[in-house]
Length: 476
Image (tube, rainbow, N blue to C red; front, side, top):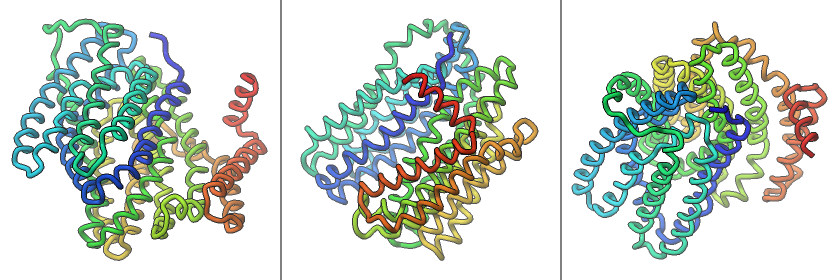
């Protein structure tokens, strides 16, 4: 198979990731008015319960499938065997979870609402997006997702009219996700042969699947744990509200950096399987450079414009989101770096056990700090704990791979970007009080910051920026 453009696949994946975050911003104001706070809370709670069953149905198979397929991109027979073996494991796990979930649903008060979301578990069985990720056909994934998400938005505005339409809303979300996943199967014959069952031995993968499932659970626990502990310790729902809004924005910006990871996994896996270690190192240093290039201005820029952005975007009563966003902005760099080392390197090079240990350590750090810091600093304590935990994961992972990937080289990749980002940050901090809080002024600050950052890099003759400027000029 011919290898696909990393740049194109990154743009495809980034487009989808941003879309998944923008859509809630479109429908949330409408649903909030239709359902009210109580209805939104009911939907959120039921969906969260369903997500635990989905977690156990998927195991670690999305990451596993993508990685294993990437190893055998050029061998249709081996690719087909991996595909069917992975599907068999997913089918068995999902059917067990479906039985458990349906039984659980009949014990709940809102049985119909729970039962509707059994479609989420059938979606797990149908979901083979990892096949297309593994063979680097990201365009097929993004196009389908965009189409069905737009259809879902139209469905919500047409059919969800009153607070009694919660079941209709939940059905739509789950149903269109299922149809989207089923649509992938149309393209399967192009890449996969029919199964020869005597050649299939799915049990041989269980050790690896479980190893990949452990960090999935750990990540799920400590990404949800912050909000749970804020509520339990502070007894103040407002603190959870501030934290939710700040983390939502930080994660939206983070998407720009981490979207490269999904694209890089199959490429790293492919070259690792061929023994091309030097090529793998080259890709890794490029990935680190990309994180510094994007992550530093996004982190510093977010801190500089937060007091201008938050008031007009969230409205009155969200002043505390500003300092929370300032702290959580550092997640962009911390998660960006550990995404490169962990997701893009340790997993494709079959060191998922080491990756699991680093994530578990991060979860333990987060939990311990939350117990102490939330008690004294409320939501700000949870924000600090998250940044420290993610940073600790990044540092531990770099220490683990230091013989293969030089920490000095990793830091050296970012020197130009730290200098340019520092100049941009100082300028924005100096001029930001001259601007009032409005969408136009926030955009003006972003443009000013971007121009300063790029000019600084051009003056320093940064090869990454100059190369891309030359490419743009050639195309024009």
